[in-house]
Amino acid sequence: MPIVVQDHRVVKRFSVEAGLQPGKVVLKLGRGEDRQSGDWIGEGLVILVTGAAGKTGRAVVRALVARGAAVRALVYRPSQVQSLQKLGAREVLVGDMRAQVTVQQATQGAQALYHICPNISPDELGIGRLVIDAARSAGVTHFIYHSVLHPQTEEMLHHWQKLRVEECLFECGVPYTILQPAAYMQNVLAGWETITKQGIYAVPYATETRLGMVDLEDVASAAATVLTQTGHQGATYELAGVEVLTQVEVAQSLSQGLGRTVCAQVMPLPEWEKQARAAGLGDYQIGALIRMFRYYERFGFWGNPNVLTWLIGRPPTSFAEFVQRVAHERRLPA
Image 1 (cartoon, rainbow, N blue to C red):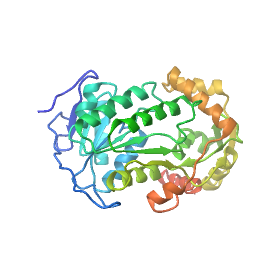
Image 2: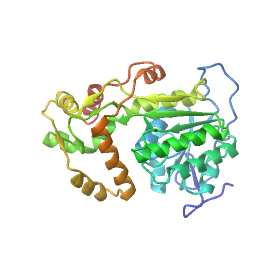
Image 3: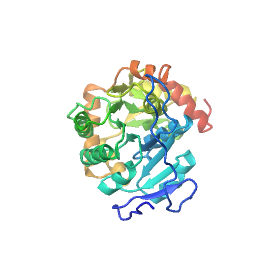
């Protein structure tokens, strides 16, 4: 019987067969045989996804399940279990990544691991070290780290913390791959109601700020490729979209895709901070994001799409295509 863990010290296991009741581990799959570079290796592979309840985690789980992979999801709250089961996760574990026993339990029996730290966490480095140590002890054979584009940018605090975790991976002895995605197109959806009802696309930096965004669905597809095919160990992959747009151009694309006028507008930082605190963000998250916004405004932020194109086998999704898809999904005229 597995240990049932509570109060952030123990991890609870939930299997698809057991519903929402703590139960035994139902997956005992062996390691795959050695294959040639690019071969499918997902069959028989238990893949742990940490931070699985967030938007990135859910997207990665969906992409892996679509490829027939056996996914073990680690979430923070029991209330998040059912949504991961509906996505097709074979096993869902509940626990706090900051607790050593949680990550030790979660990594047992996993052959591959996709690590997503809670967003803009002040504990990113400490969590990263815990998960890496647990993966090494459990014999994980492939550790994929969800980092960020340009982690070497010290001015952006959460980027810099991810760079430190990358350094730990270089030194840990576990085969690894690092994915460095750009800012998500999905971030625009936080203001979707204001965009669609008021025609205002509000951003906390100058509207001339140039950013290159990437579709999270493309990132998830690339992650699934790296996790289920051989030949990616030791690589660091930049995942960026095809365009670099000013915020005025983003608004123009929204206008065209939604069939209504949308104007880019600067949201003053004090107003943004008020909304952020109301949404539950703490001092560290707010401070880190404000520094990021100021960096964006001064220097812009974008990467190159070639690697992502290679990984997903097609050009990355354009922002116009993203808007059309979202409009269709939300039954808006496009």
